Amino acid sequence: MKIAAISDMHGILDFNIEKSDILFICGDIVPLKIQGYSKESKRWFKNTFISWCKNQPVNDIYLVGGNHDWWIYRHPEQVKECCKELPNLHYLLDEEAVYMDEDGTAYKIYGTPWCHQFGDWAFMGYSDNALAQKFMNMGDDIDFLITHDAPYGVSDICDSFWNRGEHIGSHGLAYAIAQRQPKYNFHGHLHSSNHGCEMLENTQVYNVSMINEQYKLRYYPLYLEL
Image (cartoon, rainbow, N blue to C red; front, side, top):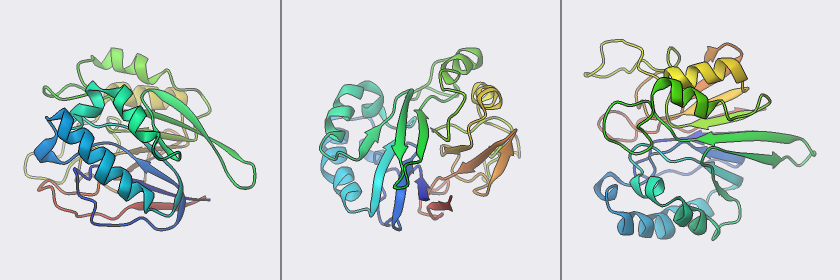
């Protein structure tokens, strides 16, 4: 089975996905210039984003929101309704889903958008302890965990002018991953941290952001053959 994972497009869709079984999208989907406007964000999501998704050669798409996705944060019921236009497009808000491969193998997926607090953004407002409890709602046998934030200590040092080589991920997420040990964690949020595999206990962690700190396409989608 082949999977693809991306994040942090911020409205930039000038690329296509290779033929894959699953596409994971880890938040910050809506363009920056309309991120604060619900009507415009909904219109873009429904007309532009879903049209892009329809053209991708994948079986199923699973997505979570990000801290810039204010419409997704404020109107989850509208997001779910829009996703119904494309039967293989699934929005996960602290939810589990199951993907059944062609050979009958079932893969468990859990999606959650929450980030640790660092400003007044969407999907924030919880302490590290509260976030740990939210993330612990995932089961013990998750194959793919898709989050917007990075776990603390892994894949969370940014290569940019504003970071001093410090770990800046989520303590709550790191705790939950160490306890639940999903096989894979795909995240975005920190645009320029390491895009290779890093290990947290037995979990493979990947940053799949598509852009750099200047909001320009810089990276390629992640592809894994299982």
